[in-house]
Length: 509
Image 1: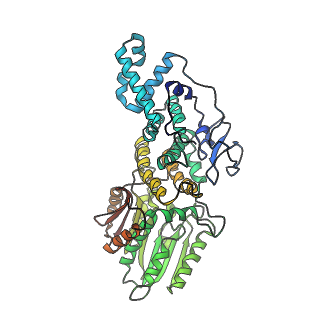
Image 2: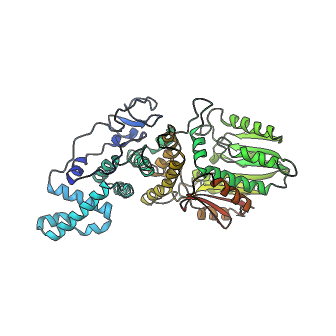
Image 3: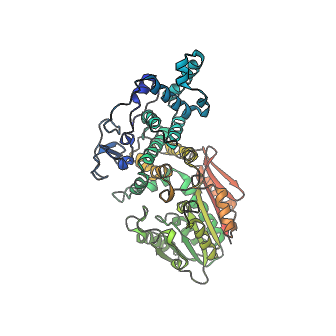
C-alpha cells in the first residue's frame, strides 16, 4: 500500500475510483483468500514488501511486487454515468461521513426542482468530504467504511476502500500502519477470512539462535508486557514471602519469560529460597508452543533455578485452557498456590459466546484451589460484547498508542519492525474486526468488568505494594516520558499519554 499525504482528490477522481468490490486489491496480509473468482490474493513477505500470489499457491510462496502495492486486476468500472447514480452516491457518502442529518436532504429532488440553496449545501458537504480525504483523515474514513459495511452498502464500501488504500502504509506513520491492518480487517470481514488469517499469522521463532523472536522484540521495545509480568511477580513475591513450598500455576506459560526474574527474586529472600513448582499450561498446537514446546520452557527455567540454587520442579500441562480441570493441576498438600492469569483470560469465551462460559469457570476453578494470590494482567479495552462499529472505534483508540510507542523505540526502517507489528499485533486487530462468535477469540474487557467477575467468584482485592509501584516507575524512566503509571485502589494502569493500555491487579480468597 502507498502513502498519500497531500493527495488532492476531485469529484471526478472519486467517481473514477468507485469500482465494483474486488477485495483482493486491498490486502496486506491474506484476507482475500475467501473471495470467489478473484485472480490473486496478497500478503507481505518477511521484509514487509507486498507480494501477489495465485489462489492455488501456498501462503509461503511469496514473490516481491515491484511497485510496493497490493492490487489484483480491476474488474469493470462502475463510474457513475448518470445524474441519479451520482446523487445516490453523494447521499450515501454524506450519511457515512456526516451522520443521519444528511437524510433530510433529498439530492434527487433538489436536482429535479433546481433549488439552488440546497444544491449549494450539498456541494459544500461534498467538498468537505473531499477535503477530508485530501487531508488524510484516516480515522473518519475508516469509521465511515465500517459503518458502510455494517449497513451492507457495498457500493459505498468499495468507494471508501479505494480511497483508504491510497492513504495507509505498513511502513508509514503510526496511524497509517494501524490503518493498513484495520483496512485489512474490514476486507477480511467481507471475505469471511478473518479466522484463517488469525490462525496463519504466528509469532515465529528466529532462524538462528542469535536472533530474538518477534514476540521478544516487542517485549523489549514496549514496557507493556514487562509491566504486566513485573507487577504480577511483585504480588506473588509479597504473598509468598513466608512460604517454604510455592506452586505457581500459569494458565498460559508461553515461553516462561515471566518467571526468569521471579525465581532469582525468591532465591534472594532473607530466610532462603523456597522450593518452587511451576505448572505450565499451553496447548501444544498454539502459536507459542513452538520449537521444543513445553520441554523447552522446562529446560529454560530449570537452568535458571539451578544457577540460583533453588529446588525446582516443572509440570508441563499440554492442554488448552478451556479443557483444564482440577485433576490436571496435580495439587499437593502443604504447598502455597499462586494462580497467574497474564494476558490470557480475554481469550476465554464467556456467556456472550455460548453456553460454556470458560471465563468464569476458570475463576471458579482457581477459587477451588484456595490460592494465596491470583494475578490478573489484561489490556484495558472493551472489545468483548461491544457491537461492531463501537468495537472498531475502540480497537483504533486502543492500538494507536501502541503503534506510537513502537515508533519511539524502533526506527521505521528497522528490518524487523513490520514483522513485529504484523505477526504480533495485526493478527489480533484482524480477529477483533473481522470475526464474530466463537471465531473471535480476542475479547478484551475493562477492569471494571474483570473486578465484577472476580468478586462473583468469591475473591477479594489484594492491593499491590508500593514497592512494586516504585519499581515499575523506575523501569519506565528508561523508556519514553509519554508512558504513564497510575495506581487506583491497588490496581496499576500503564498508559501512553494518559490512555490506559494495560491493567494489573491481584486477588486473594
